[in-house]
Length: 96
Image (cartoon, rainbow, N blue to C red; front, side, top):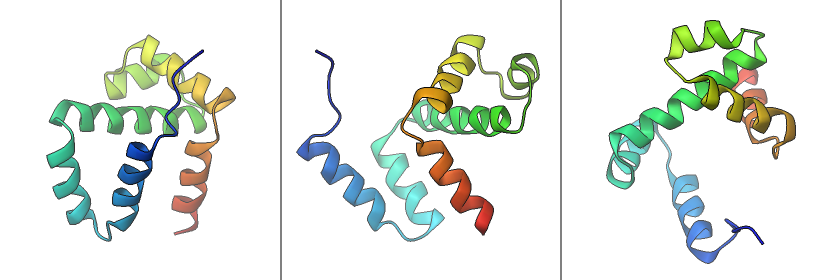
């Protein structure tokens, strides 16, 4: 049986994230909670997902983002088989 992320600790973390109101608050919080490399990795995955949705090839994405083909493949699997989290965010960003 796999691990679940649905725990009280994760609920508290997500509540903390939802309480943030500005980009400056996000920078402050994430710089305290994550390493710089963790933040950059998350940002890279988000950029990869955006480029995949826009129809870029793995090679184009790798050249622009520096992401490995393994990372691109994992993100692509999330877009196809995941929980639609990327789509929720992309839809909301597009509406702004």
